[in-house]
Length: 278
Length: 278
Image (cartoon, rainbow over all chains, first blue to last red; front, side):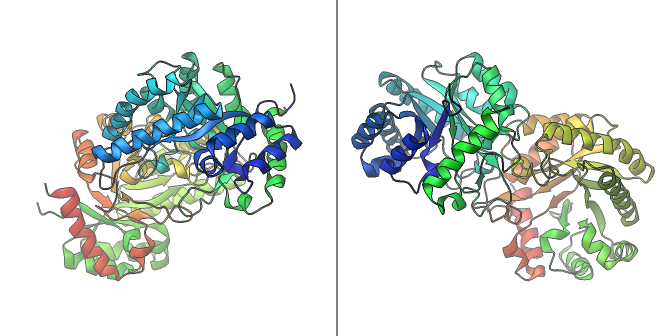
């Protein structure tokens, strides 16, 4: 097994690369796995992307992202469900077994986080069997609490598992992303809980750096630049039985402003240095 | 009891007002309590501030802030302890019984949150008896997890109470600030836990609004502008037996750019509308 065998590059890390450029650059570096995002995939064409990655011998570890399931009105709710069914279809076409869910924030004016989480559970009742029929697992991602209002009311792994465990593990599990859970002293125990029922469907890495940029979305640090001990978290998921891909997903304006191939090579180097080697 | 009887204005909410202006404006509006910050108090003079608030009939509900107790080196650590003893002395001079602690983030290069929390506990072993001798209680503030790296490794009320409960309640308790804990589904139970042992030493309000500004420090929302149900959180602390002051602490560039007296009047109105009236 090479040092890069478990690395998956999430497309957003190098979003300046087109899909063919990404496939070429991965081949050049010996990276065999990618995580994809719906918007660039749809812009290129879902079937075309599926053919591209198949021809390149790239495995698609996840599709990001479904979710946004907290709408109150029946029409918005139906539209969200329809969009999520399309996301499942796209995941199946791309040949990935995992659709990552960013569950959605509070609707305008709403203040009830608990009720919003229940609406997610309701939506999963419809989506999970639909996904299973297409060979796709849903992976609820706990997002950092700083996104609770406007992006994701699921703020901890404990909450994500409380939702996921209402469904069979082959239908619904969780995404463990270091950027979102590193601060949480309960997260290691929740990773063990997730592993015990086979619910770690995705494992993603990004480092925590400060100061946060305006909007708090595009400041994810390169591996090794921030406060998170990547080996420690890899240890937690491995102790929980996870041996799957390790996806590096950085949203970072400074990386996006650089040459994408250079960023990809650097990311692979840092992956080896901060995650794999001891 | 008037609608404003429980309101305390934290000085930072209207930091554009000098201390005499703040005292005047509070008197004009019928606000009888303030929370003070060390820097402006020291700039005006601690004894001078004590005389000013005494003459104005203002009660000082808290002094913000001690803390930053996570340093690794012995010299930095000794300096932090000395500074915290000064903060206790200042609180005593000002006539407040509560010093709020912002515990400190990770030292440069450090990645161990648990070890940093233990260093806080060690420091409290020295500080808590010192404070008790001067009639001052320490109130550990759980800060939002987005500040875990650079400001406060105590991210939840559960963690704050785990620290506080190593000491008698009259020495160490917690600050409950809606801005920091609103996202946490465990917070209501932790408030009950804090109340059961008499450890709610301060209760502060700010609303959660998005997008966050760069640095994530100065975007606290006016009461009613954001995602937090203020009455709900007042209900939690009251159910836990808390009947003390309710301090409004907003860090908000837009408020600071306005006329301070106008902001103070508006804050009092919003307090009545969103916290007191039903």
